[in-house]
Each structure stands twice: as structure tokens, then as C-alpha cells.
Image 1 (cartoon, helix red, strand yellow):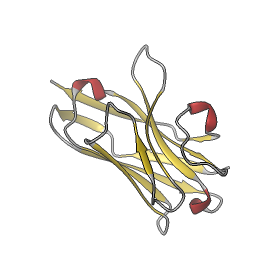
Image 2: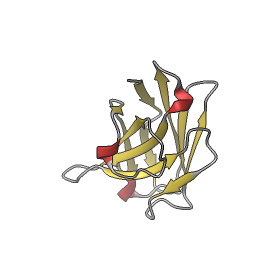
Image 3: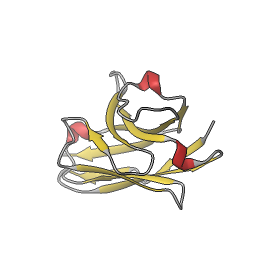
Image 4: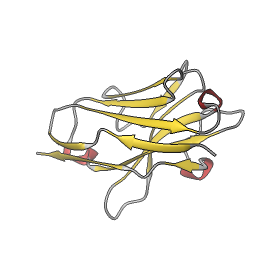
Length: 125
């Protein structure tokens, strides 16, 4: 399994931006599909974005499409989530996740074997 550590969370005003990072260690990073999920208090963990092994394909939840961008740098073993136009409803703990396999369009948390510890994002109105 791969070990994941998120960073970059914080408190930001509505309309602001944050960039989350997720550093991976362990097996070959480029063999993993990487994704971001989030979980707000009292809610289930929900899919945010996923990126394919080399970064050529991405998929977003409708709620973040056009505002968030997922990217990866395989040379640095890192995946990013650039979040612009943040809204109070984006407030959550954000988790990065990794999985190996033949498909990259994986939006269910059950598909992912490795998880980071999470980073808190709070958007004030």
C-alpha cells in the first residue's frame, strides 16, 4: 500500500482559494489512480475529483466542476487539488485516496484502499 499525507487546508473567506497537496510514499506513485474526497460533519464521505495514472484524464463532482482542479506530479509523488471560488458548503475534511487497478473512473470511496489522515478546510461566509 501507499502512504498518503495531506496538507494545505485552512480557514478562508467565501470566494477565496486554497491548494491542497497529498504526498505519497511507498510503491510506484504512477501506478495509482488518485482521488480527493471530502466529509462534512454529519454527512457521508463524498467524491470530489479523480485523476488517471499519468494525469491525462480527470473527473469532477458536479458541485465542484469549474471551480476545483485536480492535478498530479508523478516526479514528486504528489497530487494536488486547487480550489477556487470556495463556498461555505465546501467546508469539510478533505481526504486524498489511492487505488491501483485497470480503471480510473472510480468515484466510490469503497474502491480506494489507501487514505490520508485528512486536512480541514473551513470556508467562512
